[in-house]
Figure 1 (tube, rainbow, N blue to C red):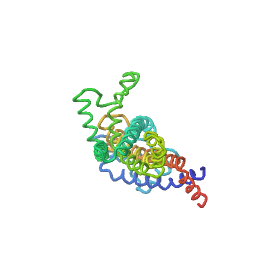
Figure 2 (figure 1 turned 135 degrees about the vertical axis):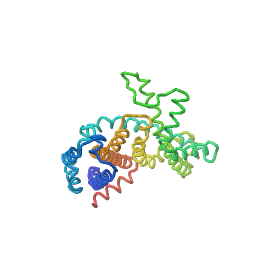
Figure 3 (figure 1 turned 90 degrees about the vertical axis):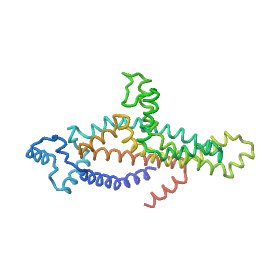
Length: 323
């Protein structure tokens, strides 16, 4: 297992390098001048040139990229141009807030998606199956920002049940108030992965419920509930676990829009502010940290898949030994 983990980690280095290079180039293509955004509309040209030189922005692009690579290899993710704070410190402040709604949204999506998928498979070609299939297709297709706006209009503006913006705190708002601020952004983020999990679970369960082993269990008089939840669902889990990492990445990406809709103080609102202010260092650091998080999550998912499916573990071990 140690060889497999080491091999996967080494394979991640080229991926992270591509992410770093692409992000660096993309930030330089953003229209506008970061120094002009720092000093405002009225500024002295000589002062701008002086600041540009102090930030190294007047160096050739290849020199800037090399300096950036050296810095991140030394653990220095740069200083935010606009906020004048270490980028990694700003990320450390915002990342837990984004992780909070992303993890809760993923848990909601897995629970409801798997249950809906199992029910849909059990009631195949019935009205329940058709309704759940339509809802899952809607969930996969609906834009995150539109879902967020509709949730605000319904539950905040029309019904007045839930707050529409901001992040509550247990100290000020109490536990109920804190949870009430989580409900709308978390369910907004959960809509798309919930539809995906419903569809995957349905397909996998239909295949498993039609297998010879299930027919044999039915012939022995095993109850349908036991067959469904103890046997069929266990065999249907590997494809679901495989998709979890992808859907978690989707939650993270959706958080950029969701946090702006609900004014949630996380990575999404921070990177939006960084782009508006052409804050190269903060944009690059944010994308790099998110990329590292994704590759680590993918590695953990692969390891979990190996635990559940011994055949995959054996093939991976064979590949590591041959390599």
